[in-house]
Image 1 (cartoon, rainbow, N blue to C red):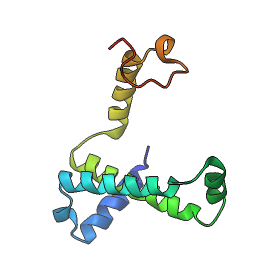
Image 2 (image 1 turned 90 degrees about the horizontal axis):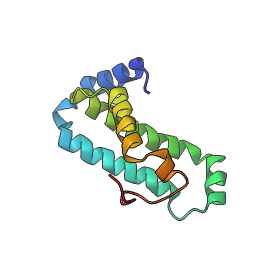
Image 3 (image 1 turned 180 degrees about the horizontal axis):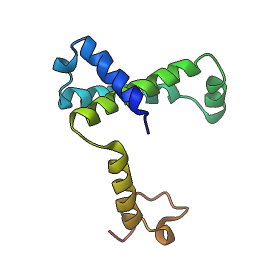
Image 4 (image 1 turned 180 degrees about the vertical axis):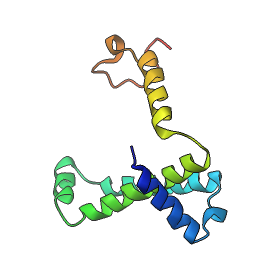
Length: 117
């Protein structure tokens, strides 16, 4: 997902500023949620056409900044909790494949209560 040198750069950046003391798992999770909300705000009140226009404008950089903030906080959280994000995502895909078999969910938008577990 994220390149190892980027992870190292993030960890070095944080360490140089002595910010580890503020980055408890709770505060990282809070910050991740806040940044994800700021990402969502970029899309708020926009129809598909407006989003495409924004993506092709100088406002795209603001979107990329929000994405980077989300990735940074998630990277810190995974690093600090010793979570291999690739393994975690692979495991979740396997669980979801069992929970949502293609033959029962393909083309459906139902979420969880499809009559099977």
